[in-house]
Length: 221
Length: 224
Image (cartoon, rainbow over all chains, first blue to last red; front, side, top):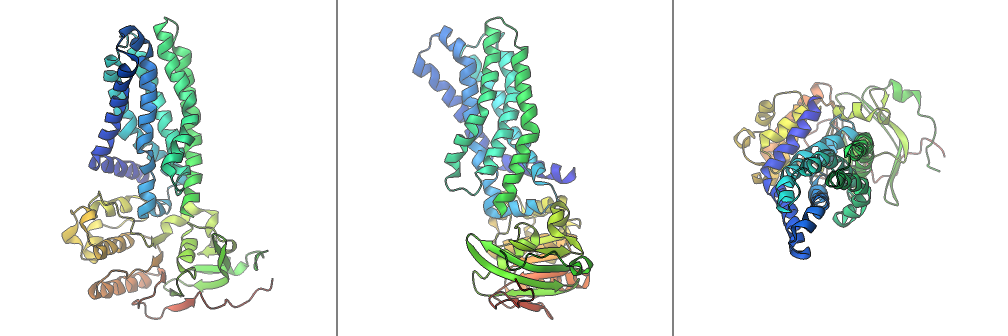
């Protein structure tokens, strides 16, 4: 447990030292969200209908931004070799990285999603459902992104490859995540959508670190 | 068919320290060495010699368990290395070309992380002291010079309980005084029963080390 905690603490310390990375991700999230009223017009009725989907797509894209440095920096400076020799199993290393990615990216996005959604005139009774869906959603995105980042490690132009790999995998998250607030807006029950989102998270939780761990082993060879 | 594909001999399971048998490795499509068999007892040291590209770094990564051999087996204290990588990792102190130092953390924080993740148990302060880095303990590692970064990476080794040190050009960028101190550290490690495998083009203070020349054709002990 101690090496795992040390890994997460080191990742968070580095995120704090390089705070501009998190700030850039948040600004990207807010700016892309702000583009939609400019592009489709400021009509409150249309924006309110589109707000959950806009927030979800922007969060998905913003969560991709820091992924190429998630293992990239460790790979380039030799830290990955040392991590692989630390005695921690490779999937646990990947799980620690995913947790750190969520703390440094997913959680700030979750906090910024509320203001962005209100800016887009989301109905007040839909907002809690959106945020409730984003909680397991961002966790699942961190796990999927970690697996993608580990797989493209060492590939030429990995940064371009990464979204092509992660975005198709993230589609179930987007579908169920956006369906919950839509159901709430129509006065339908939101429970099945949120449960399906949690099911996606439950599948990603063991599978993504395993895939990422195998990819990390291959990357150091 | 690899030249050596037999069952690992019982000798490897009995041998103390590091035992390698019939090793072969590829880098890409190229066979860098084959039929490599050696035994390094506890307290022993081995120098890897050879031209650039003769497979010195590849062999070190094999011994660390980071890379799998194309054929052959490696034993560490009688246990097959690739049977339990998570157990072998903490036994290894690996210093590659790259120092694995996070520029955003201070020198002391870099070591504290290494100390917390399996490789290290001893005090960070004494490791910094041993490489005369105490003055720079609270300096961000990005401000350290190349030689100081190398010393910090060496300090990480002295933290550890690792018995097998795998050093790739350890003296690169070190001044004469630091090379001298490295010699003392290496001698202490061997006195405690540790083994050292080092790849180098420069003179290393490793008295009594056997040399393994990777460019020389390996003796054919096993007929294919």
